[in-house]
Length: 147
Image 1: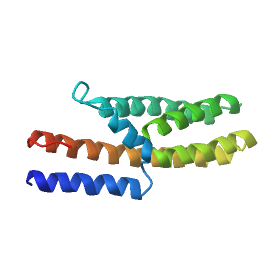
Image 2: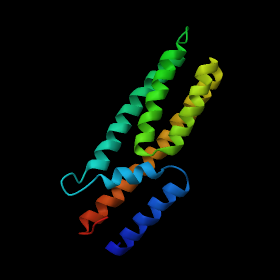
Image 3: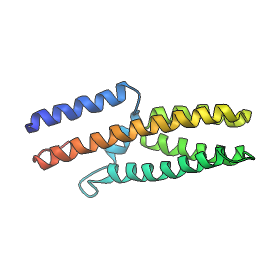
Image 4: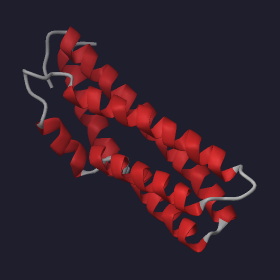
């Protein structure tokens, strides 16, 4: 594939991520902070989001399997996950976290469990989509182009 095709594919793919609600304008703002002095800024920030999210999702899974559910602790993890997803523009994960927090407030264990599955689902989707986006970006740079 030539450089122009790769760049067109990158633009189309990025546009689809916004149109499908995976990303919001916060992701654009994150990209604007990247420059020649820190060319991997977005990848580094998103990688930290992935690590942080996996830790929170594991904690949430364990917490919801306990005999005595600590809804304050669960809510704290969901709140942190909501904040970090918001900071990179992962809009669909953020929206599911908002729903999840509502179930925490109600102390609705089944609602929390369903929301956790939905948050995990949205997280996996956005993670795969961002990894694809970064691979496209690497291909463009390897071909001598720029974003």
